[in-house]
Length: 427
Image (tube, rainbow, N blue to C red):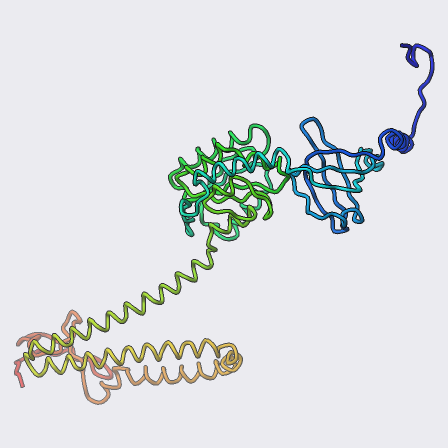
């Protein structure tokens, strides 16, 4: 068949917008109105009331838009995986050059092959007892180490890491990376789960992934993965998708969280809360210790009183000791109260004290100088006393330290007299 090149003809040059409109016109005349059947995927409802989704089957998919006027006529809420029949008009979304179906009517024709497969596996595993609440293990509130199974590039990993860093930065985290979407995801998830349970310090595992369509989450509807979760020796928390998303892994896990962040929060008691609990228990322990100490002290006192009294002096000393002990406790308590009062009023009194400090310091210096002067040994010597010492300077305070013929020095108020002992006598 001859082409434009063989005939020497130049093809028409279109502008992009004009070509899109020509294609739209061709679709309008060739297909519209059109009816099509397929599975809903990625259904979203915008704040404007318009709905956007894809219609797919095993051989292809088609972008769809249902405007608010048509969406208000729906008698059900479409879910991913549902098999529906649409009626509308094919067109081209010119800003993106995308083929799309403007949906004017939607009705259910079944739940779709994906959803039916999900229900069959759910019924099978439920009949085997894999979903029973009594089979599931409690989640440790203070784990030594937290394991995480997810993709390295997933937003869920960032959400989990942020939540754990905020709540329990002191707990180590072990990551077993795995793809979370695609044909190879389910076997990789099983391998990652089997790998991380071999870490002896891991006390809980977070199996997490962000939201998506039913096919995006399909790896978590795998039977082998479900059984791996059930047989895991470590409790598993599933945080898969959004709150409205459910997978087989959610039912098999020991606990389901509505989001990855919630999964992290469920196994991580905040450090501040733990510290507050520790302070509470410390106060209780101190109170119990003091109570037991008082009880044993009382028993000791009672036992001592039954042993008899060797002498009146010992008894008096014991009584004085008990009195001093009580006074010491009272003084210590009073001192603590005074210090608290001083601390509370320190700021308000700071200026006044600062102004009075030079005067007070001067008065204290004068009093100290007077005390120092009163302690001057020369004042005693001026009253007629003297200080005896040996030739080597050692002080003599007893007759026993002298002997006849010994040379001694007598220090007086105005000098030193050298003396010789002629005789000693006790008085």
